[in-house]
Length: 123
Image (cartoon, rainbow, N blue to C red; front, side, top):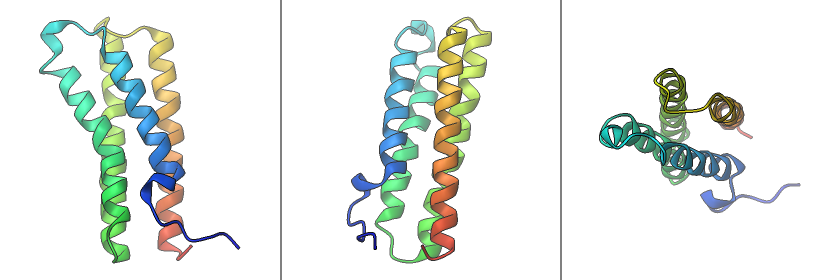
């Protein structure tokens, strides 16, 4: 039997979305300075809100509240997933970096979906 998880830091989904946010920060370091308060800021804020919503949802006691926060995390993830495509089209992001970010975002999507499904099914 698997022991009960007592902290959000122990959640694989939280750990992976944290790593994804770090990659987003690294990718945006080379964006033009004129984008600092536009794409760069929006992308970083959305990236950090993914794991933040997972952490906040973990602290909720009602399943519906938990699911709501995990759903917000998923929405933020999709927002982040949008911006690398745009950034690549604008010449701010190399194709290999785009591919890496999209690959990571898909992995995080799967984790969030599995986590929400497990929660809804009482696992």
